[in-house]
Amino acid sequence: GAGVSQTPSNKVTEKGKYVELRCDPISGHTALYWYRQSLGQGPEFLIYFQGTGAADDSGLPNDRFFAVRPEGSVSTLKIQRTERGDSAVYLCASSYETSGANVLTFGAGSRLTVL
Amino acid sequence: DAKTTQPPSMDCAEGRAANLPCNHSTISGNEYVYWYRQIHSQGPQYIIHGLKNNETNEMASLIITEDRKSSTLILPHATLRDTAVYYCIVRPYSGAGSYQLTFGKGTKLSVIP
Image 1 (cartoon, rainbow over the protein chains, first blue to last red):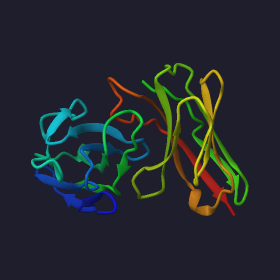
Image 2 (cartoon, helix red, strand yellow):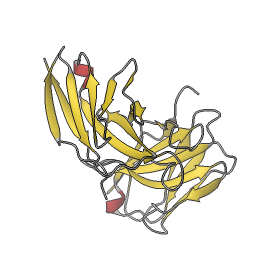
Image 3 (spheres, rainbow over the protein chains, first blue to last red):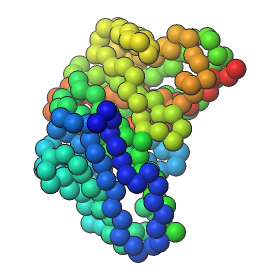
Image 4 (tube, rainbow over the protein chains, first blue to last red):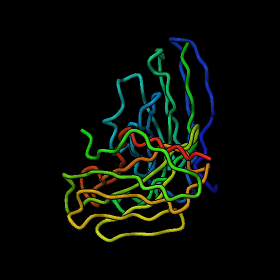
């Protein structure tokens, strides 16, 4: 596709429920990133994939958060037993490679609201 | 830890140049300066990046001081659509941290009619 696509754009759920957020990166981009953005803050790194493997998941806040990228393209961020503090915009980005000279292209984000 | 310092907000008159400053006094020799912006309800958008030399593209110009401790992003003729939060980010070319962007709080630029 022309850009990074994220679905759903908005998700409202109840505390304790399970949520999946999907990211379709730009075709051919091998690197994929998930960020989380709380109100009034800059995006915070969660996890990064190089191909199918999670190369760095140090930003995941706890074991309720998990992400997969089974075929090296689409990725799903999974949140178990959601809490009100998980409410945020979840951003996905992709890039052609991972040196510091390459550009990350972001999607519009998935806004998660946990009631 | 924030590696860059930016003013929290700035105003600019429509049609005038917007000059957004950024301090990065601890920048290393192998670190790029990147600028992204985020328009309300959208994801961050890449603007420009540079290492030592000044850079220009269709969106903006990046002026990096000779000692590389600060830089300025210039939008030559600001429009209302340039109203956004602008993030200045320092990023190594290779090694640890090269694959990700570390965002601060950025500068909220308001372009005023």
